[in-house]
Image (cartoon, rainbow, N blue to C red):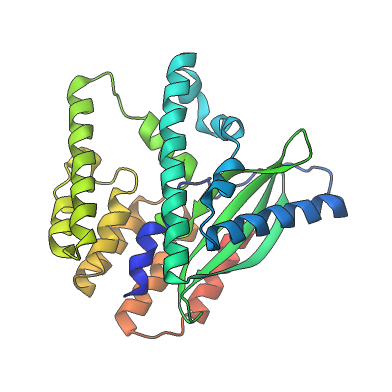
Amino acid sequence: MSYRYFLLLLIILATSCKSDTEVVKPFSENQLQKMDMTAVSMMDALASNRPEVVIRNFDHRSFSKRLGKKFFSFKKEEQGFLMGILMNSLAEQIFTLSQTITKAGLKLQMIDARHKGKVSQVTIKVMDAEEESTITYFVLYLKENVNGDFVLVNFYDVFSGKSFSQLAQDLLAIDFENENIARLFEKQRFRILEARHLESFGNYQEAYMQMDSVTTEFRNFGVYPVYRALLSSHLNDSLYLKELENLKQITPNHQSVLFYDCISTYVKTDEKDQSECLEEFLIELLDN
């Protein structure tokens, strides 16, 4: 199977690429050790199909603070309902991620861990089973809670183009009080379910057609454009390059733009050596 296929199931909602920059007291050796241990335990959990470990360590209260004024403008009951939707979505995707890594034998490698402002940033490289091709990179954002434990407050998967908080904000921006919009949104959800069903039988052409027929209002909503791009990778290079270009236009994160450029170069030249391109990308990813 093409390495591109696995990117579909590595779409995890996450945090913004920009971390807090205020000056804080440096971590002690004990804090750094606990941070590393937490990150390693999450990596091991994903690689051994134990997603509940990651989900259990996610702090939804800290995450809610990243959703901005829009989220807190809702009533308490509505906030709880929306957070429930987001947490269910996160849990489903982490379960899928863990299963994919396990079944495909993908390799995870921690390449950087640093304390930046209020949040610790741990960068992980995802490779194929032979460790020859880079699948994606993701960043764990960890925060020390009042008990001195480190919890996951956000997650950024580079290929997804948007973070969990950014995707959540996309959801919050939908006017669900408008019955027409709500019905339209529901119809698009059925399209992606049908596409996933078709894809499970290897019918990538019809699955892509389902996603390509998503109405204009939701065409670039959430993971829809990413899924469409991955389905196109099974069809032909020109279509895949077109969808990658679309992802470049809609991602708010420059790191993702650079990563799409690396993939596009690989597709166009069929060269496995992406070291120079990825080196530039990594500098950007680690410096922000």
